[in-house]
Image 1 (cartoon, rainbow, N blue to C red):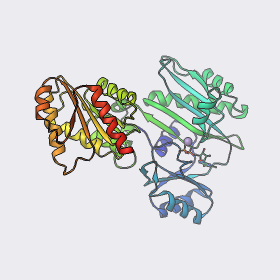
Image 2 (image 1 turned 90 degrees about the vertical axis):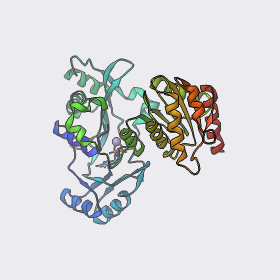
Image 3 (image 1 turned 135 degrees about the vertical axis):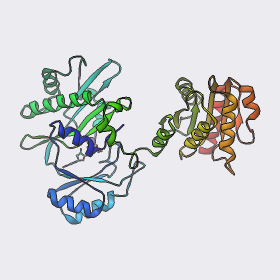
Image 4 (image 1 turned 30 degrees about the vertical axis):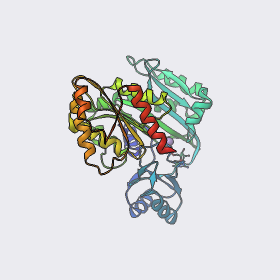
Length: 382
Ligand code: GDP
Ligand code: MN
C-alpha cells in the first residue's frame, strides 16, 4: 500500500523529520486560500501515487495568485500517467542549494534492510542509479540491532554530504530507518531532501509504501488507504474480487490458478515473443463466478488484446471453470478480445465438452495456448 505524499510527510513530520508547511486543496479556491495562508512562493503538487510527477507536469512553482490559479486549473483534473488528479498539496517553496536523496528498502539479495544516501537527489535519481550506481552509498543494517548512529554518519560522509549538514542528514536517515521498521515499510524515501542556503535540511518529497501483509498491525496507516482516489482502478477491482493481481505493461491478458502456474504462463508469453498484460491468480477451487470476475478484470484493461486462460484442475474443477467462461462470455454480443483456453487436471474432459468453441479457442497444451494468444495479440497490434 502506498501513502500519498501528504500522508507520508505527516508520518515523517510526526517522527521529527522537517517538512515544509503545507495544505491539501481540492479546488482552485482552496489552492488560493492555502497559498494565502502559507505565503508565496508555493509549490502546487499533484497528489497521485506515481513517481516523476515533476517531469510529467504535475508540480508547479508559483509566485502569486494569477500563477497559482493557472497551476491549479492545469493540475486539478489532469491525467497524470493514467491517474486522475483531484487533490494537490500546496506547499511552502523551499529555496534550496542542493538536493539529496535518502531511502530505506529491503535488499532481498543480501536479505537485509539497506539505507541509501546520495548527493545527487532530485528528479534524475533513477538515471543516477543506472549510470553511476556508486553515487548512491548503501549501508546494510542488521535488523536485530537497528541502525546505529555511526552507520548513518558513515553513509552520509561516504556519500560526500556537506559537513555543515551531515549530522542533520544522518539523523534524518536514522529516523527514516526507524519509521521503515516500526511502520512495516516496504520502501521509505525522501527525494529530494533539500539543503537550504542556511544549512537546513527539509524533506521536499516523501514516499512511504507499507507492506500489505502487515497492514493489520498498522491501523492508522491502513485508514489512510484511499479506495476512491488515485491508485490503479484495476488493482482496486482485484482487491474487491480478492484476486492476486499485478498489472504489467504488455497486451496479453493472463488468467491462471496458482501463482506458479501463472508465472510459468507469463514466462512462456515472453518466450514466444509476446508481452504479458498482467499477473492474475484466481486461486484454488475457483467457482464459475470467480472465473467470470477474472475475465471481467482482463477485459476492462484497455491494453489487453488477447487472453490466455491456463487452468490446472485440482480442487479447481475443469467443468466449473468451463461453465464460468461460458457464462462470462455469453453476456457479450461480440467477445471483446479473443480468449484461448487450456484446461488440464481434474475434470478437464468434461470442461472441454462444456466449453463453447464459438466463444473461445481451445488448445491442448500450454505451449500451444500461449503461442495462439501471442499470435492473436500480434494480429491486433499489426
Ligand atoms: P516527483 O517528481 O514526483 O518526485 O516530485 P518531487 O516532490 O520530488 O518534486 C520534483 C522536483 O520539483 C524536485 O526535485 C524539485 O526540483 C522541484 N520542487 C519540488 N518542490 C519544490 C519546492 O518547494 N521548491 C523548489 N524550488 N523546487 C521544488
Ligand atoms: Mn521526488
